[in-house]
Image 1 (cartoon, rainbow, N blue to C red):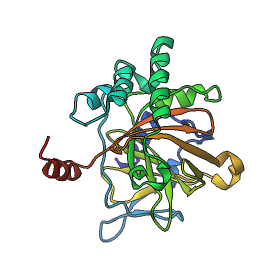
Image 2 (image 1 turned 30 degrees about the horizontal axis):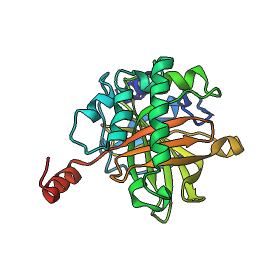
Image 3 (image 1 turned 45 degrees about the vertical axis):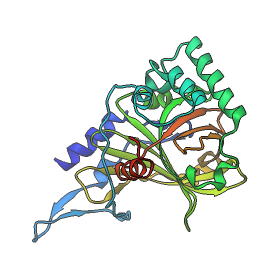
Length: 276
């Protein structure tokens, strides 16, 4: 049933997760607020005063235990030698860094430092390359993180995405936790402080399901969180290809992300370059 599927998604996302590296605690999902009723026309209705947002472009991403870094390095992506060293350092690390040994972490940090010193694209926030959907490949373990946060991000069953859209009338940054059933998305209003730093303030969250054409609001009182719902993100490296990004958050976390490319974009790129 629909309510059972809702419960299953919440259960697989570990009940009452703290959103990783954001310092935000979510209470149990109020499944009782979603009540499927049948009208005379046999249509499904949603009984809630909460707004329903259309979700026409939703795509569900299946998850696997395959290491993201292995998928990247085995594809003809055109990374530089220094970028490939970072990706090679990530191979074999499960849980996006949670299971990394001290030696593996040191290798990743050395590779990150080399790229940050190389600088990449100057003023990343001014470049359109920063916009898009980025998949989290690795994150460090800041001392402020709770075990719940680390568990949620460190489970390979989920894919974790960061979406950045700065060149719109409503600049946004969002974090998405995706599995075969759907996604939990936490959104924030964003603004650019300088060439590297994005300021954000979380203001809404919602579930998206593969079998529903709309989003189910996840009522979180962000306004009551005050400064805890605010933060910043520094992009310390953005590759000239726009495929690899390194960023550091206000809680001391380092993120390594890879741009997710649409199949149509990959085809047009292959045609234009005559390769791949």
